[in-house]
Image 1 (cartoon, rainbow, N blue to C red):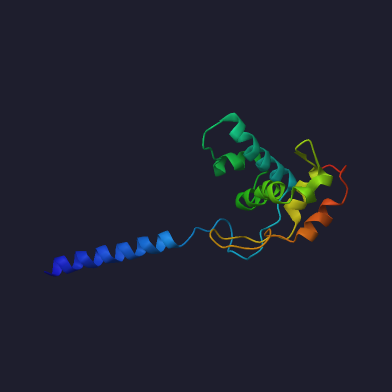
Image 2: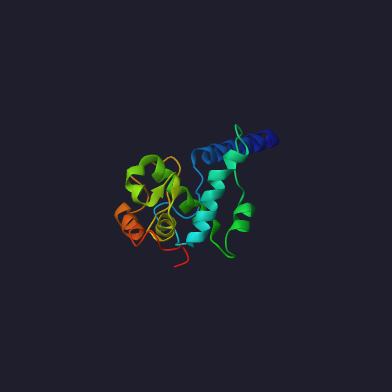
Length: 156
């Protein structure tokens, strides 16, 4: 009887733990609401291009890029989670705020100013399943950072 009670308790504990794990969405990067570290604009561009080009190389397939691949296309010691998170913002903005980016886009190509601003603008981590209004960054600051000059190279 003691063994039966012991195993029933283990089963109950395991089920509770699994249910909790299913209810808690995973964090990506830092703690939701905290600042995303600034990164290098070149890394943002490289990861964004990788994400944009990958579906074209594998049409009709579900594809993803692993952290090791991202590490190989970024500068040494890059914060890969911060770079990947920030690199997703231009895609979100071109989907939901394309009109605001028009001065820095031409024929579907993004100007270096967008990647500089994306790498440096104040931004906060979001959590899966939490609804929010707007982007996780100050769009006014982002647009001011973009306005620093379209013709400047990323390396500046």
